[in-house]
Image (tube, rainbow, N blue to C red; front, side):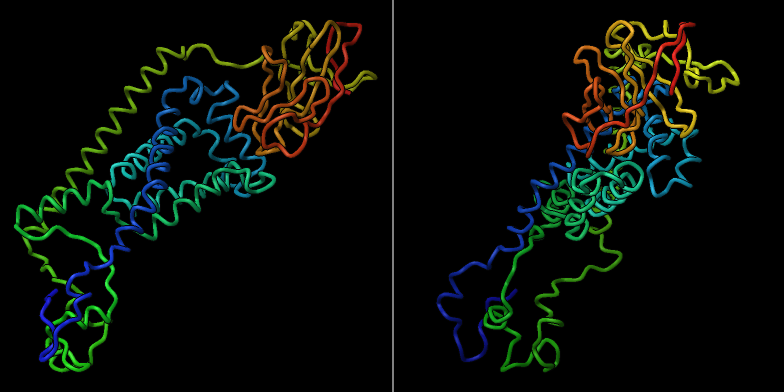
Length: 386
């Protein structure tokens, strides 16, 4: 922008000495903490899935398979999710890779709008499948993440702590051009400084009325499609994207291998399972579930509730005392498990904790306790569900 004042006038001293306001730069800095948090969180989430030896283990209660089974019960997309349970492993891998790519791109500042849109879309999809019935609604993190991504999607590219901005600045320096910079300038100040301004008209626009909507100064220089520097930036941006993608893939592989070596993929965390005899009918004691010996004192076993098809869990807390519940967590539908060390029933998805003796919720986002069931041991040594 020219500092030449209009003919016959000098710009006021305050305008000649005062630098343009940097409100645009300030607003970009305001989004940096959010961008770094979301980028780090999604990167960690993706790496954690690959490193967790139980995430792809179908028999584990914290596996992607178990989470899809839970989602099929509570999601408004039930008709779709129920057909995806058999594809749990590739779906889990896709989610993990997407989280890694979105998180890494957001952290280093490249393809930022695309990454933010992807993050918002993934968060909304997880909201519909996992935490749609979370009560109160704000206890479901997926909905919060969806709205957290929206400011970054609307803002687009940021020049603060950004690889994209670094590429553009480097290209400008090599071309001996000023580095691209965003500043906010009141239009009255533009007219006071601009050499094209003449009593309300713009000489650069052949005397047309001066207005910010078509001001050639505010519009800035245009670059033709064949501009060499534009092409160079495009090449560098593409190369950087490929580099980031490669680094994400290598990091995922290394983390997955390390997680399985350290975590021991061959040790699923799952209780015993009671297998009722084929065609078991209701008797005076109830529906036979299986031998009581399969639930030693201090352990738990899973079973299927005949009427609802929901998973159930029974714990023998002390000799001959069996506490049983519908194992579906009332928060988001995941299946709870028994943690003997704390003597609690715990949801592996969001951490809700329930008392073994009563099913009452003692911690976590679950709005209420587990549904109580009555299981007794018969004289024949088998367990029966009344």
